[in-house]
Amino acid sequence: MADPYPPGQPNAAAERVIRIQDLHLSFGSNHVIRGFSLDLHRGENVMVLGRSGSGKSVLIKCIVRLLRPDSGRIEVLGQDMLALDQDALDHLRVKIGFLFQSSALYDSMTVQENLEFPLRRHWIATTPGEADALVGEVLAAVGLSETRNLYPSELSGGMKRRIGLARTLILKPEIVLYDEPTTGLDPITGKEIVELILDLQRRYNTSSIIISHDLHVAKLAANRIAVLHGGRNYLEGTYEELRRSEDELMKRFFVFM
Ligand SMILES: Nc1ncnc2c1ncn2[C@@H]1O[C@H](COP(=O)(O)OP(=O)(O)O)[C@@H](O)[C@H]1O
Ligand SMILES: [Mg+2]
Image (cartoon, rainbow, N blue to C red; front, side, top):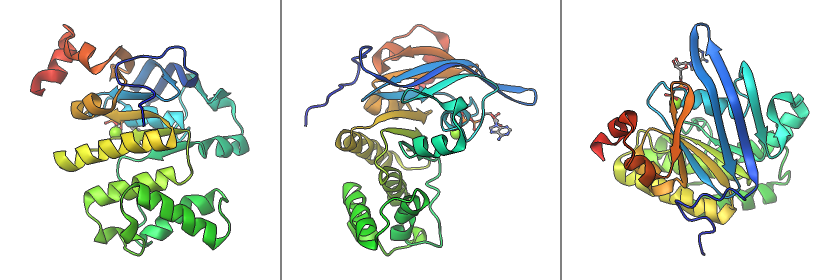
C-alpha cells in the first residue's frame, strides 16, 4: 500500500487532530512544562524528542487528561479536552490509544484476558464471539496469534510490547500516543517494534505522537520531530533538518549518530 504521508513532507493542509497551545504544568516548584505548543495532523507521525526527565511522559499524560495542566489549551479531534465532562471524556478516550512506557499488562491475566480488558471497560463487543474475533484480529496484526493462553511472564520483552500494542489497537483508535515504545528493548527488537508501529499505522490509519529519546526511532518513524527542552517546543523539523542543525543542543543529541 502506498504511504499516504511519506516521511519528511509536512502536510499543513491536512486536518488537525491534536492541537496543544501554550501548555504549563508545575509540580510544586518544579515547572516541568513551560509553554509547550504542538499540532498533529491526520495521518502524521510526530515524535517528541527529549532527554530523560524533560517532561515527555507528563506531556503525553496531559493530552489524555491523566494529568491536568495548570494552563493552556488542548484540542483533540476538535474538542476542548480540558472542558469535557467525565462522560464526554470517556467517549473521546476510546478514540485515543495510549501505549504506556512499560507494557503495563496484568500479570494475573492471560494474553486473551488482557486484550479483552479494554473492550469490557468500554462496553464494546458484549458477546464472547465478538470479543474473540477482535482478539484474534489484533493478535494476527502483531504476529502473535499463538499466545492467547499465555501469561505475560511467559513472554519476552519484545512480545510484551507487541501485546501492549495489540491492546492499544483493539479499540481501533484514531490517534495513538506512544510513550518510549522501544525503551528497554535491544536494538533489533526495538527496530522490529518501530516497523510494526508503522505497519499498524497504515493498516489502522492512525495519527500518532511518539515520545522518545531515541534518534533511531526518530529516523525510522517520524514525519516531523519536536524537541522538548526547557519545557517548551524548542525546535521542530524533519530528522535530516535536525541532524544538519547548527544548534548546540541538537549537536549534542546527534553526538552518537
Ligand atoms: N506525578 C508527579 N508528581 C510530581 N512530579 C512529577 C510527576 N510526574 C512527573 N514528575 C516530574 O516531572 C519531571 C518530568 O518527568 P517525566 O515526564 O516523567 O520525564 P520523561 O521526559 O523522562 O518522561 C520530572 O522531574 C519528574 O520528577
Ligand atoms: Mg517518560
